[in-house]
Image (cartoon, rainbow, N blue to C red; front, side, top):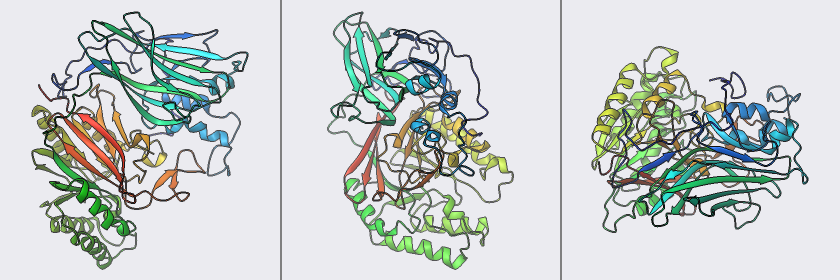
Length: 546
């Protein structure tokens, strides 16, 4: 993939053109929607061309003044400084304007976005000040809510707080008065805590009055400063999941990632925390980079690293360990890929995996787990060590489990670009095979994709993401960043398209638990140092009740 500021697709974006009212209906190749669980009522992302949304802006709305529909990469290009060197190899230190006011950190964003950007508007010549404030509202069409007791408004959000800027979301039923359901502002009591929202997802429950038939949602932005912005994407209205029954039973899993030897001091605490939070776990999912794997590592040294991890594991009573292979597990330039793969398999089978290759499927407690990973001896750079046989396996198994109406866990060490935290960076650009892999995964809204590799903390808002791929399920798949035991990474202070170790604050080694119920899966992230829960996401099984 080219750098996000080059080789852009220039599309004609009409001022009010985005998406039509879409009834909930199963799409080819995906499980569809549950009748007794969660139902998608309306999708309002901005990649269509149907004139469904309206924009109401005081004064002149041209030239980025007020809500504008734009390709993500065109937005970045519009915000790029003119006449300023932004090549980190040549221009150091970089001008602060090269960092785009964190616009590029909107990892959830794909395709066309709705953007209210005073910074770009002012740079393009619009007058934005106390005498020329911007007041702009993005208005949805009437969303059918008849017969619903409540709905959830869900959208991806990137917001930078200017001095007196205010972002508001309101709802009005059947042409009645507007009711505010979210506010961003400089006040600490606002939903943004008075600060920024970086690559967030808002889930807003909205109670529906009796006999109401339609709801209109408005996104209002006001700002009298020539700076900062609000961008949104992937707007969905859906029914909430019902409360989980008290006697509901789940199949639970423990999740651990990126030990890399450096994380060994945290391993005892991590395993004890997992035992407390998921004592009846059916398996532990180990999402790659078990060892550090220096490039000059010999066979004796690599075997010892695995032995050190095994010694830490042996101090605890563990369920079966199901690992994925990571880049550090095959990093040695001294050993062949086949030798390193054999060392990985020996470790995996020591802890009960019972596997003979780096991709496999296990059904644990009725829950399908599909593990994919690089293989030895795969020819062709475009395949990125993923064979045609593995691709066929993934396609066949995902199609099968969709037919069985099962939520499926897909585990791979590597994330896909433009999904979870940090994957906006150049380091995570997909290669040809990864684009193929995500296209397969993206067909199925019953997939929960677990990845490691980034070392970005689950404290971040985009530790989980609903990802809609081109040509895939309109409801998307769910991507989860599993964190790491080894060092934490964060945005680079030197390059806006890079990352660096987070040395300016204490590390936050993290683990996850996954609880799979018939109609939903609940994923929780925990801080190993404090033992406290960091984050949680509840993912509906789209096939439940069908």
